[in-house]
Image (tube, rainbow, N blue to C red):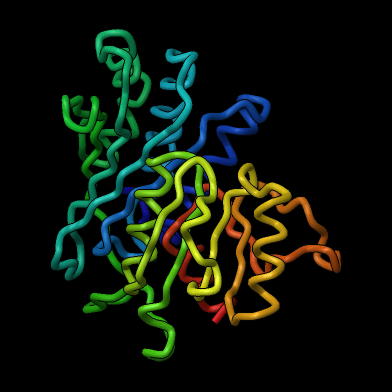
Length: 267
């Protein structure tokens, strides 16, 4: 029997993305993570086999779908996570037919699937999904809230998200509301109806950070206590660059742990 390993689930998912980027020379679809609030931060189990299975699924999807723009990973766990429970990993919004790649994938991953004592299932849910259910343990027994802010002063802040796509907006909204926060969303571009000075934190995707928004944020920072975070894959500003406006950088793909650390840093 394989020895159990421990891992931060956020780190594992981000490492999946880094591995994909390396394999595909940086030409990788955006990864969007949807995680239920019951998913533990630190998990125990056969992590090597779990990682191998997930990585191969994602690689096969990229290989067979040349028009794939986003990889959607959904992670779900039971409401009562006591010791060892079934955690479900879903790769959703799959447009290609299962007959094209699923049989070869199952054959390729046969040994690792046996180690995990599970099988891959294809369902029509969420635009087409591959589901992997595996038994995982939790490091902190009896813990029901896996990301705990120090005091109630951190809670119920007003957050504005300025992002390009609906899927990322939905993922981020769920992550911020975990704490809970009050979230407003701008899709595609900033809209003048949103008064930036009314927000405790404004998060802007770097592709939407134009000159107009730069100047609006600069003026808002002068007259309010608003915090500004830029979001993307690589911060274009060096740490000691005096011209940057953001006090924090939210790196994609965004995880629940990254949002937690962002709130700690800006508040």
